[in-house]
Length: 115
Length: 109
Image (tube, rainbow over all chains, first blue to last red; front, side, top):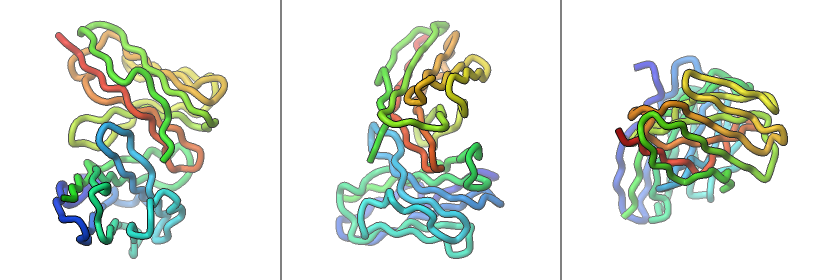
């Protein structure tokens, strides 16, 4: 399809484990965003990329969270030493550029459960 | 993280009724957006507002950008069953969206 895709759709892991969440943005979109949505809440910004570089990572909660976008397309959100409080839906969005008025298109999310 | 205050938290209405919801912020935004989220899906943009005082419609949806730039309103007229879902406002200054807490809408036939 032509939309943003995220894999896996669901991930169950144990406390302390490492996880990687993948985002495939819409082809040609240079800006990519990660958000985290806890149950009953709105999405919260984590990090955004313009091309390959992280332009703003101010939303990452701590240094256990890291994201990369090595070729300016696919992005991976990496979480080390997972904690139960990391359980949430992780949403990825992409937009044509980072300029204002460019709509962010969201993927369906990855539901992460840390046991 | 920061979340905008959205009211009401939930609404239970009958098909055909009109719906109003609002969003307030302690800080100013240059852009206000309204999204709808269905279960298991990401948010989908409904309406974007770029100017204080702006009133914009999209079919049965009408949204307004408050004059103070600290609030926004969404109205849905003549609700139908497929309007069911969670509605989020979002403010945007620097391309990272700040979302509201959401309004859950249930429509009964």
